[in-house]
Image (cartoon, rainbow, N blue to C red):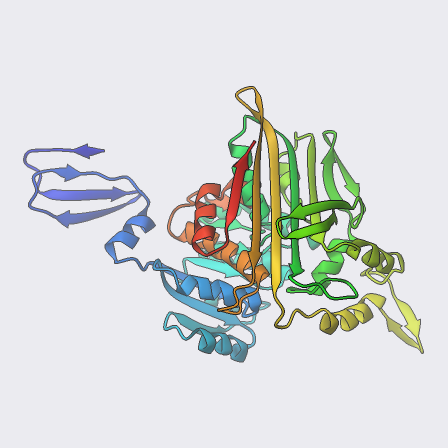
Length: 430
């Protein structure tokens, strides 16, 4: 709204609790109520955000790469207990925006000292650190996002900090990978356009472009997490009732352009917080996509107790976990190395709009960036957490507290930002 006053000699830009006065010879007063960070971005030529990335692994590195390419980011601190590892990332990216700091995230004082003075923290550490980082964010007044972790109800612990975060004026958003993460944001976007949501079906898979035996799969993140997803039961909603089904079960055939037939089956953790955000839907299911035959082969390993965390055997007087042996064998065997990968995603949200049945469907096929040598999974995951962190930093997201992605991230803006980075999400309505 613009108010014109004959005798006014100032332009007053009033933003939230802040005011900025700009001298002007024009005879009017301009009052703008907007977000302070957005205004600051405009007035300072674009660079306002100081971001800290915790963890110099693959996802941390790619989050840093994305951040330094954005005009709104002034500096990025890459923190890791292995300082040399962080410095290698710094050297490879060759940007003056990147600073390196050695931080032992297990030490609360070190963690808080490192986070202090930043606007947003991206937690790219192992999921066991998520609650600790969230608490440090509250203590230091720094917004924080993470890549998720439903083992041990870690995401629930972060969300339980809602009131504390709200009082501290901090935004916490966990689960910002692909699944959970991207699928939550797209589900929330589809649901927001319906009067009633009846069905949510989710399909995601990170697979090699050219599969090789014996499993037709290569890992791009921790195999430890993969075994958890294949072993723990999957929470679904069927006929309006929450229930658990075995992971690797109910295999169905699914097709994508240039990929097919593929298989999809239940795995744990994928529905994330969606069962609480949409408790009244008739159907909620998440399935992982793989090449045909994968589920049957892994089911044998599950049946033979090779994936259990709590199972041990004695071998020549030594207590051994078969799971540890399996991980040692599979980790080098299934390493993606320089091979190309692809991430496939389909989110289907159905319900009613103006008394008529309507379905919103979102689909993504993302391949490795060969020029930058960035895997498809790293692009999809790191861009998601980076984009949302920047939405908090630039004021697009203003709610304070702890929220799951589907309740707080604007889907339209998210899709635009991902497309700008070459990760195209196509939407259809039918």
